[in-house]
Image 1 (spheres, rainbow, N blue to C red):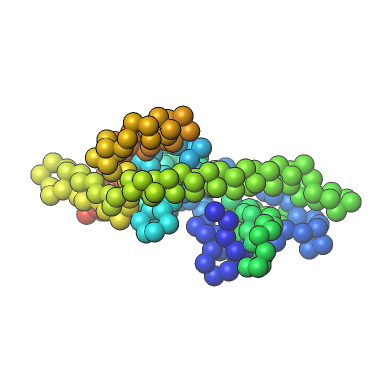
Image 2 (cartoon, rainbow, N blue to C red):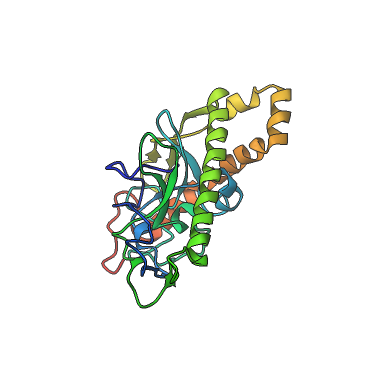
Length: 258
C-alpha cells in the first residue's frame, strides 16, 4: 500500500519528502490531538488486521474497481465524517485506523526501478519541522532517535499488514465473492436513499462455497474476516442516522453552527 512520491499521492498526502539527517537534522515531530486531515473524509482504508476492532464502529466495504481496498466508512456521503468535526477533533469515541495514525509519515519508493522503501513525510502537514516542541527525529550524532525508529517500525508493520490485506482480497477475487454493493435507507415520509459505488461479499455465493474450502478459510482466519465485514454492514443505518442528526443527510441543510 506504499505509493511512490508522484502526482498520484495516496489519501491525505499532498507532498512526500524523504526523511534524511542531512536536511532534517533539527526536525521534530509535533504531537497533535486533532486529525485535521481526516475532517472531511468519509472513507478510510483499513487492513484486515483491523477488521475485528473497526467492525464495532464502522461499516466495512471494499472500493470499486479491479483492485479493491477495504474501507471503513465514517460517513455515507463524500465530505461527511460523523466521528470527527471540521477541526479534526473526535466527537464520537471510535477506533482510529492505522492509516490515519501513520500520517504524516509513509514508506514509499523513491525510484520506480527499485523495491526499496524510504521513510517520507508530508511537508505540508505542519506536523514535522524545526519546532521547539515535539520529538526529535535525529540525535546529535545524526542518527535516528527512538521516536524515529518507532515511526519506522509502525510504518513497516503497516506495510506487512497491507500485504496480508492484498492476499485476503486476492482470495476473495479468486473465489469470485465480491459484487457491486447497494444499500437502500428509508426515512419517514421520504423516498429511499440508495448508496452504491462500493463492493461487498456476495452472501449467496458464500453459501455455495464447498465445505473443504470453508474449513480452509476458517483455519487461515479468512472466514472470520468475511463475517466481520458482513456484520459491520448493519451499521450503515447508524451512520446515516448520525448524518441526519448533524443535518448532513442527503437533502438536509446543515445547521448554521455545525
